[in-house]
Image 1 (tube, helix red, strand yellow):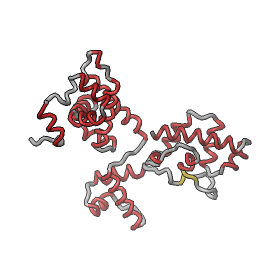
Image 2 (image 1 turned 90 degrees about the horizontal axis):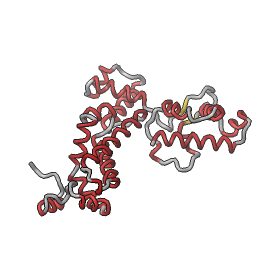
Image 3 (image 1 turned 45 degrees about the vertical axis):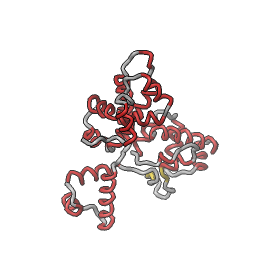
Image 4 (image 1 turned 90 degrees about the vertical axis):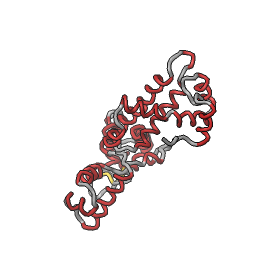
Length: 267
């Protein structure tokens, strides 16, 4: 079986098979101080991540299918948990590092899967299939039956069905939010957070709009909810201020609060 490690790592292992061993406390101490060495240790001990996933979370292929994430995403989360465990590990306590690390790795992945339950994270293949289906719908002016789509795209009907279900649920922050007044200017979810400083570019991701809004409602007062609803319904800042008999500055503060809450939900 061909060794999967880079040559420089293989050379170190050939000289000393315990060069990257996590049973040696001096190696863990070195990881805390030497980021390059930590990176090498991470590569050599990647099997610890997959062991943790298989034993305590499930088969990677099932996780990928059920959560619309890539295998690389799982690995990156596991690495993050691994690094956290290195930084937090107390070599003086006599605890085996692998047992300590498994907990951190599993927690990191489970937290991500839990927190991303309301966020759609499409794989590249799923995204491409959705785009193809959308193009066909735009060209024909209607969405053909699943059997016709499967034939046109040479894909399984099950994949087509799943792609359509996901695609219908996907919302973008730059999509218009439906307003009660058809003559009012259409507002997007991004408009709600665009005024807030510190909202990073990564927030512009596929999200369930209604799911996000429902998660911030509990943290808002009745007045703040009314302001939010006015803005979604298409009123601008000054119109909202008049409607609620408050200053435009108050409207701005409320929308920044909403922005912060939305930002926290996405991240």
